[in-house]
Structure formats: C-alpha cells, structure tokens
Amino acid sequence: MGSIQPDPAPKRVVIAGGAQGIGRALARVLLETGHWVYIFDINEGELNHTVDTHLKQYTNADPPKLRANVCDMRDEKAIKTTIANASQFFQHNIDVLVNMGGISTPQWKEGATMEDEATLGQWRAFMDTNLTAPFIISQCCIPYMKIQEGTTKGDKATAQDLSLAGPCIIHIGSFRAHQSDPNQEGYAASKAGLLGLMQAMSISCERWGIRVNLVAPGRIKVAHESKQGDEEGKGWEEQVSEGDIDMHPVNRAGRPADVIEAVMYLMNAGFVTGVDITVDGGALRKKNK
Image (cartoon, rainbow, N blue to C red):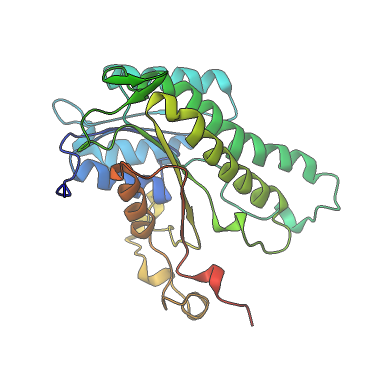
C-alpha cells in the first residue's frame, strides 16, 4: 500500500471573487499554508482592503505571494486580461482555479417575483455572472494548467508521479441547486447549471490531466470577512441566531472554514474528479416544519 502524503509543492492558485467572504478567507488560509494566490473581484474597495491591509504581509513579501486586480466577471475582455496577468505572476503556470465569484443574493431584487417582466434582466445577470463567467475563466486558465510533461496514453495526459494531485478547477456552487426558497429562480438555475458545467468539464478536461469538482455551500455566515468586519471587530459567533441552530442537524451555522476544508481536500485529492460536495450542515436532509 502507498502512504498518504500531501502535495509537497506550493500551489499557484487563482481565486475568482476573493475580495471578501469565503473567497477572502480561502486566500488567507492558502497564503498561511505556503501557497501563492492571485485574486480578482469587481468590488474595488473590498479588494484594496484585502490586498493592502488584511493580507498586506503577503503582498509586501519578497518575493510577493499575493497579487490582485479588479475585474468585471461579465466582461469577457477583462477576464482574459486578468488571467493573463495571473499567469504572468505565476510564471505562466496555474495549478488551481477556484471559481468563487458570482451574485450571492439569491432572491429577485425589491421583493419581485418571476411574474414581473423586469426580472428578465436580473435573470441574465445571474446567468452571465454565476455560470458564463466560470466557463470563460476556466477556458482562459486551461492553457496554463494542462499537464505538458509525462507519458501519454492516446491523446490524454497521464500523471507519472502519483504523489501529486495535479491541476484542478473547483467551482463554488450552492445547495440551492437542489433546494430553493420562493423567488430564487435566477440564482438556483445558475447554480444548477454550474453543477452541470462541472460534470461535463470533468470529462472534457480528462485529456489535459485537469480534475474538475464543485463545492456547494449552504448558509455560511461571512459578514466578518470584510472591510467593515475588520474595522468593527466582528466575529462569526455574533452572527449566529437560534434559527441557524434549529435548521442544521449539526446544531450550528456554517463558517467559511467549513467550505475551505472541502476546497483544500479537493485540491489534494488526486483520484477525485466530477464530484460535488455539499457543505450545508445537513440542511438538505432536514424537513422544514
């Protein structure tokens, strides 16, 4: 039997949507554990705070471990420029892509329902940001991720060193792909589409030696992972309510760390592809009263 060993080499990780929330927490954990990180986000204020204040020790390191830029995920040209910048920072090699970015507010705006024709524009925004953008970002990253060396079997790349997990793409979906509250058609459909995208990509990317998986968070408390949270000294615990405890069989609300643990597992799970991991504290299994 082979021994279980972690990937010995630091990874070069791109995080789409890393300015705040789970993305920011993931960037911090990756940097603390020796990896290099490139993040991008549309929120310039949060991104600048994360890079220049919250994680400045990694930005100012010699050599720097962290770089970032502002990017509108609905702008194809901006995405292409951003990934080109990331590849240059990583010396033209990307090991991991985490597609974290997207519209996180699940309901239609201002209490609208799908009966309102005005929601069509919001529908398109959900699809462009939560589904099309991860496809384009992945498409741009693949040339810098695919295995270039090693043996080949037919036209497929084959990893020679089984101790290495190899490159991987991790989409961040939602348990709303399986269970929805009222007025979440746009959000739920985009996240369900992301699940289908992951499954198809895991087969298509086989030839390049790239694994593709998905993590589907449930209700995760993230307000403290922000500029305001830092300035006000907010923590995770003060966001938890009795309702959060009641709706989860694990008897607590979700933390960014819960999602990060799943992401870190998939980064190093060399025999896992085409899999979605739901991190929701058992909420999908509990019948509403």
